[in-house]
Structures are given as structure tokens and as C-alpha cells.
Length: 88
Image 1 (tube, one colour):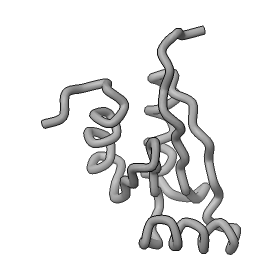
Image 2 (cartoon, rainbow, N blue to C red):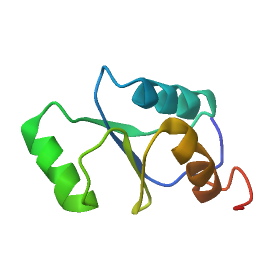
Image 3 (cartoon, rainbow, N blue to C red):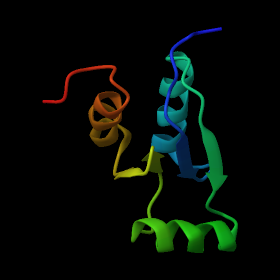
Image 4 (cartoon, rainbow, N blue to C red):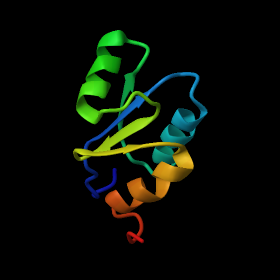
């Protein structure tokens, strides 16, 4: 078990979203735990809209910071938020 503590991560996603799958696979490959929220559930979709102001997938929340857009758009920002790389 890693001694490195990662911030709380939530991913609002859908099963058919390629960027959602890529994001989750990348986090898993880094050994970073996350909680997945299924946007097919209307209550979860409404919660995501209320908390983030957007209706897209994936939406990633890292320690309260919101990221959305394609996986290639999110990846460097999430990596920086997690301290995996220096912010550009």
C-alpha cells in the first residue's frame, strides 16, 4: 500500500463515454483511487449540474476543484492538481 495520500476524487461519467473510460484507466494505472458517479441517474446528473454548472462527461472533481472537457484536456490539469507534474 502506498504511503502517498491522494485528495478525494469524484468522476461524473457515463458507461459509453470514451473520455470517461480513458480518464478512469489512467487514474487506475497511477494507483489513484476515485469515486465514480453515474450520470445516467437523473439525481446524480442534477447534482453534477448544481455543483459544477455543466452537463458534460466526464466531470472530475479533485479536492473541490472542477475539471471537464476531453480526457486530453483534463489530464495535464488533473496531474498538476495531484502533484504528478509541475503546473505549466
